[in-house]
Image (cartoon, rainbow, N blue to C red):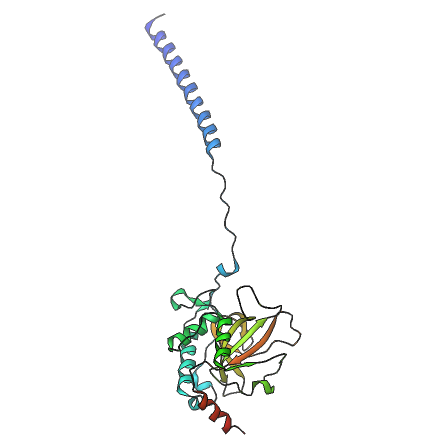
Length: 253
């Protein structure tokens, strides 16, 4: 065999050996990849409170509220602070009372206002707020009330706290069945409709569903509503002296 043929033969052998070696490496790599493939991680279950919706809120001016200037100074400060928060486009955010978090829940929106206005001793949770007003003697219980012109509301004033409860008893961790709280703003000048302040994902204002820290229409659940009941209302303890409230009541016809 001459040198040229010998070189071609050797080259052919080397190429075949290299091809076989690379094929074995490729098969080994596939086997290793298949064996080492990590298990698919399970995504944590999304909870309702983890879903943050965009803010859809309404606001108004204090001048749109009937007899606003005649209210006690403490009440005017609370209502002004509440209306200021409705202008920030804050959404409904569970367990928050901080503007920096972009939203608040119902009791958080009320707590934020009262805390900023230096109201002493205000609790964070709605049922605790109700218990606080009961202990201070300003709470008015309402039962099976379906109309706002009912005599049960004769002591209701702007700046008062409004409480709702879920039907079915007290929830775990709560001493009383209250689950929702808002602030009564008063009546609009233009049509006399009652309005309230707070945070909600579902309440409405002027026929529009709202989500976040907003102004809402004040409406009551139906008497046979299987889910919710209007529980009662109360003055904010320490915000207005009791003698002032009594004097105001005495002026009424």
